[in-house]
Length: 364
Image 1 (cartoon, rainbow, N blue to C red):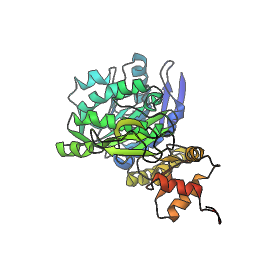
Image 2: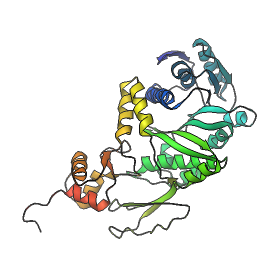
Image 3: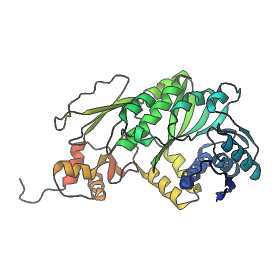
Image 4: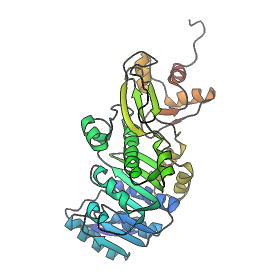
């Protein structure tokens, strides 16, 4: 048995119960998120393991009405003793989310879903126990599936075609959010993503749900498809159920790879991120929140090394490309979705011009 102190929580980890100390940064961020965007009320941790997340939310974000679930008998016992050890009032149940959602009459202001692997099997049942204006925190660790390494599995699990390559983490994040929305709409909910993170081996979406037919319809307008050219790195995005996306690249004439459906709206709320930054306790959490706050919120990005390779020229600093784009009046930033990637409102031709830089005198 292992003893762990994290945040204000002190827990024990029983042999055979899952606990990842490397996810402490994400738990720090989740606490900061609830302090910035939450307003107290009832909280459900659907896949609790040791109970560390729910315990920290109770101790550090002030949640007093806490329900903890885990279908594993050992994990249930571990979470129950940890809740008692930390003196929090919590109902701890040895059950699955599916069984709980179909038998409870309760509704929750906050739901945390952090399973091992894909959250997809639980998302539908999660929608049954929401309150209007609830906050969802949903983690996926099946990143190989969402990132297109197993394309058929992504189609089966998320009903979406992924994109493999340099854009895979952002497209995977957007496929996950799109999947959550498609389930939410069945219960007449729309969504607003507040924070979206792809880091290490996971993706995590922090979302507010809003009830009503108009809210669901408005959110549905942010679903769409994309096409990507693996040769010149051009991409085209279009919102809608069946948008007319051509199969040929308008930049180089090569055949484009189609992907989606996926969420094409905003991924982050800058006000929420600013409030989280003021609260974040750990250096690692602050650095990631700061990166998200400064990241331009436009769909997808350009990988500078991939563009220089396609042009057959030497390496160029992404910082220099950003500087050149901004000098021409475009917005541009780094992105946490890809090292050496830049987000911008410029076109590919504008980016290529910035990558090439000013022509030398006498050049034709």
